Figure: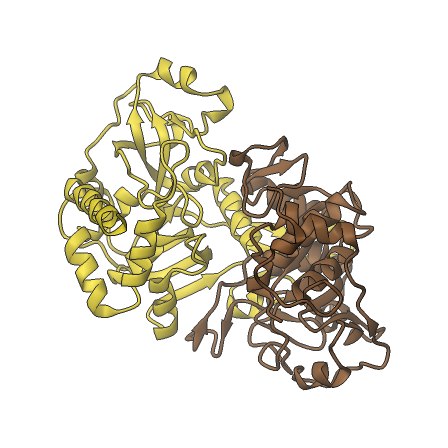
Length: 266
Length: 290
């Protein structure tokens, strides 16, 4: 498992020694900061690596699973379930996941096929809902996640096809809908950040997406051009780079085969 | 205790066209595939299928047996979406109730508890409400909150597959996750349990911890011994998912001609000839690889 940093065969360095994928991973890792002792639910390669990285660095209290139904005492490398070894700290069959998310002891980072300016997310289908032009994976757990605990989104290819004026099916509930709900039922609704291959986005006081930081080498115009609605880039700083320890953990421990470079190119 | 064992071939006699059918397992994990294949061999049709779906849904859709699907997802796990399900959705050939996964489980729990609904926060302000206009909300009598009143789902028949069972229908899972098979059984008027192996009752206790005894015979009406009965989905620890065969299924499903070939090769004979054809598939696969 001892792969040296020079052994990387994929991914172009950004001029700082870190690839774009690695910048995305540490940006995602920062999203888990201060979440506390909760289950990190991460969908996608970059989010999964980021949760395990957070667990190994700034957030040792975070709870990570093996992709099946075990919580692991130590963050396992990508793709390795409890069956491959490691210390199991808890057993979590699917039936418990719904109780956990209802309890609020969970933080999700999911993908989106469409997302609008309020963070309404679609992963269900494109086109007419009865006879969609394209059936996607379905609403899955997005409606329940977004009304129960913090939810972030990870977008591997920031584009106008994904950042759309409106979404065809609201799966993950956006800020506009949560705010106009007339009772206290949406009090746990908590959209955090949207991390893409270009930038880190947050929400402004009106609940609109706004750029918080641009990844090194990305301009505000790049993000505006790749976003299908008007987006405020005026407050954008620069996304931090991974430090040496983070890079080593990503490359030698968490993702030695470089799966991250297949999810984020460039 | 009565002996509830029955041959697989008897199953279709208990299932009528138009029934609501629950199918246990999760995605491409421990699905009662032998039972589903037996339905493919019958003329049962017009089914309402309730499931956390995998290739069970794909096969039933491809055979034109589904009128309506109530689901949390239809996934092959290592392949995100079943291709037959996608085709059925995109052609509009089936009615659907697509629920959030947690809502789906809430519907099962309500059904198992003989309640007309159970409340949940999941679904509020999402388009699940618009896509399923029959869904209503309920106001809390205690706090200033509304919840989704998820209607309890009752099924005529449930099909589930477990690692071991005795002849009376005490069912045992030996893998890591029970999924929701016990809820399916409790929410159904009749349940058929297929199992890798029927064993004498004392062997159940010897085979795993007491917590592995998921299902009491109270909830089981028929026991079918079906070795490899979850193939090609996984049935840990007896066998994992047959990824090579699943890939073959998913590739074949994308094109009518290759699907016809798949059907001819694997789905026209009885269960023994299915398993023989799968063995042939793997030996020719191995030859190609070597």
